[in-house]
Length: 364
Image (tube, rainbow, N blue to C red; front, side, top):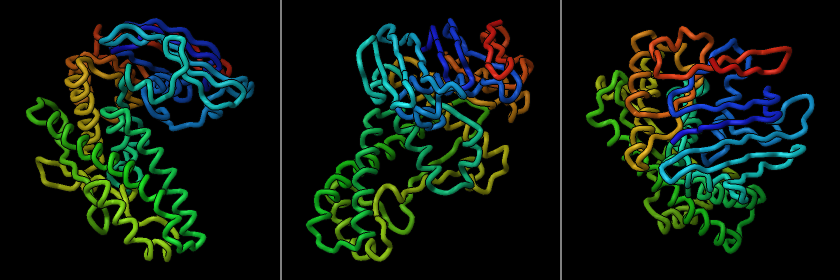
């Protein structure tokens, strides 16, 4: 699975870009602020979800024109090539077209998978539970495209239930339909998360890698997560009294947390050194990619923003060896070409420059 063509029009800092690439890794280098991350953000749109920045369509338009934007590409996968377009006009919601037919962002999951690592994730093990949930949900979405719709349904129902709670509505009949929907979608979320952790564990077993294994568990804060739809609906009904006092829902998958342990040392990831935390994170991304390659018959797109700058030469070489062995088209960014020296001829190199406020992309 790889992009063979990528075109951008008025997307972020890029006015016009047209790239033709092959299935090898793509090394993007240039100074900070030149537009490297904007390029891989465009690539991230080719998978289900909201992209690596989770940005609104209006935020992706090039300034100051704000004319709207378009990202197009040809995605070559196990079932052939697909032309995919993403566009937004005048700040309107994003429109997706696959093979010239209207589609949803979720539908991209049927033809593409992508995993990514960006600097903001470096705090994964020490930030709040919300960040780890979001990270886990991104992993789950790579395996289960229906995860996105379940998350949307759950969040919508929970917002409406929370509104009732804040308004101190005590008539139970107002809650029944909302709690039923939260039960259905919440059970899907919880099951997908557990299946994702199990799949990652299998992908890490026996893997010959320079990156340490992370053992992951899913916790529910104060109590246990109800195991199925009926149990979650019952727990929500039982919790209404406490929820009314708090003004929000206190039970459900939105309260879950993902905890990690450095397996070889038995040390919680939150207590590891900064370098160990980064290595554990990379290990998970590689395991995710390895598992998808096994399940789908082709590796996913791999997006690694500024990852090389945080690794010594030995770990960089190990990372590049793993990506090459996986056969993935990895889009990687760095400030200079020397950060990708260990890749040799295994990668294609593209320089990204800032020319008077416009990003220029120069294949080498």
